[in-house]
Length: 471
RNA sequence: GGGGCCGUAGGGUAGCCUGGUGAUCCUCUCGGCUUUGGGAGCCGGUGACCCGAGUUCAAAUCUCGGCGGCCCCA
Image 1 (cartoon, rainbow, N blue to C red):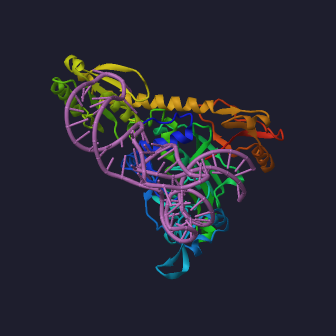
Image 2: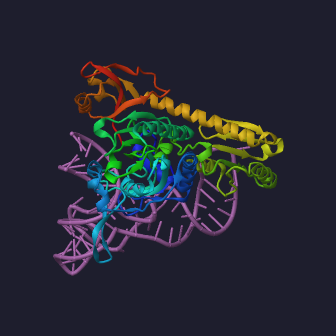
Image 3: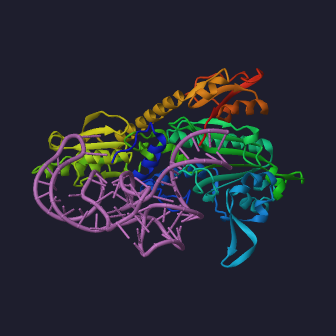
């Protein structure tokens, strides 16, 4: 079994997802895919980090998957943004329903009627909750596993309610911090970008997005943070009584990450051999491969078992299967195992193991006595730094700063430019076949560009913006 | 939104044009022998024409519809 080269990203992605047993893409409904056990383990390991971050400041809740048409339709702009992609439940058995039920495309309209009941006075604020749920959208474009789905199987959405615009705005900054911590943990570089007015979340005051760059130069939105102001509060009558006895509309935020974070994890770090996973989220962190020769099996196996025992606090596999060693190397490289030990008769005699890391070709000897938890954790951290550095370098190569509009079309990747906030100028740069992601909210440390300059269209005051083909 | 291509064992292909016993192909899988420091070899076995309707003595093959996949343009 040979993977297509990562140069052909689309092919590589489809193949690696299947062959590394992340998702089974053969489920017979468009846009729905099955999580294999191995993929699901990665998902759990990744999400437990996000849960850890969220649990510090939010309470986990669960709201129903079905939303009555009457609630979904209340906020005018919001429903306009979703109406052509909502799945409807129209019947209970054979009986037509009086009020159609929507399969949630997102949960604002499920939650906010209840927030109205939960929020009574200033002491109830701020309210901060999150849930991890599936959501449904009737996508008509190409669907892709983990990237464009009709059922998002794990939308990790947080919703907060605050006393005023400023407090909510402060919380938006905090939420950006949560997501930065999460993606730093995964060693995935990102751009924090303020979406244009005309491309923000329907019903939001403004939207800040996390975009990463895929190997083919297209960008992937891997997280969004929205300031909802009091738009939804007014629609759903979410008011509180202040200490002065007055009643005010609350201000809200919401932010979410889907399984696109897994798509980014696979795509950003993977190589021609398959997955490359950071130590913390690898279902198998360490594999030990015995090199067995006839008559010497016992000494080798004994050394391997001892090593596995020393490392038992990690997720270790001792692969004593029938395959030859080379076949095992390929198999575990495909699965992204960060650390590999080999022990053969020579090594067992010398009291060493041959170690190698998933992201590097070289092998080296380590005395068995020196292998302990501390050493492994040090290697894990170094691995993460290497992954982050390499990924940032590759992404930086995919970004080009341009000073004339003609260059936009030629560049196969992300185009950075200075642009004013005028909507006409924004639409004009989009004429060259790329979408305007928006303006950099902050500059990534891996990009060395001027934060402001003259607008490429009108010459006015401009700030650094990005254009790209998007997923 | 517009256009094109495609659906045959778990995966990949040939066969379709010109209807007539689905292939001694690659891979995977199972059993056996043999082997093991970067995808071993030989022998044997299991396993398939997307769904529905139509045309026909006869459909993987022709026609229509559905479902599913891929690519290009906007």
